[in-house]
Length: 244
Image 1 (tube, rainbow, N blue to C red):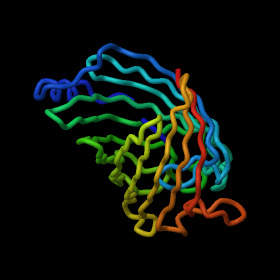
Image 2 (tube, rainbow, N blue to C red; image 1 turned 180 degrees about the vertical axis):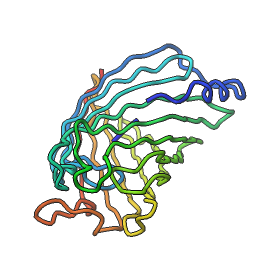
Image 3 (tube, one colour; image 1 turned 135 degrees about the vertical axis):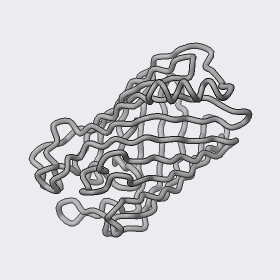
């Protein structure tokens, strides 16, 4: 789950009101990877099993960016829908800075290709969110707001997710990222929960990186896959990614 175009008018207004830090040059990058479990906001999207992932990103020197990212998933069909095995995230936004504070605003479309989740809840799983983030020093706070129903939950428009994280450079290619999040689902209080994680990433050189994430949530009854698998339980996720 990841990131389509922020309206030009809004982005232009932000650029006019504040000085921004611009990239030295525009870049186009790609990435492919595999994870032992695809966790999003603490909940497994792949039935606690491995997933294949990949994406493409374009960052313009002006601060605008667009991209697409995809992953294999299992939660939609596990819920009883007849189809829905791939997630594609389309996103776009604008990054800049005011003094020592960096900001990022954008729009994200979660597209579950050909999904029939409406067979289960009466609502399609495809979701639209707008987001805004600020970074000061090591710390980042991000707010994501659903402008559609959230992931197939009926009457859940205006749900939100609050994400607090830090980024510590440990040297020798290691980075430590602790995180805590709060997922609020409107009109579904029993599905509202917190998630926690700590990720250790190692730059292996030549575009290759490895990661180890310890993740947990405070809602063990949030969702279940077949055979009563708890998709929000504590676990460890190993990942390997190649960027080029």
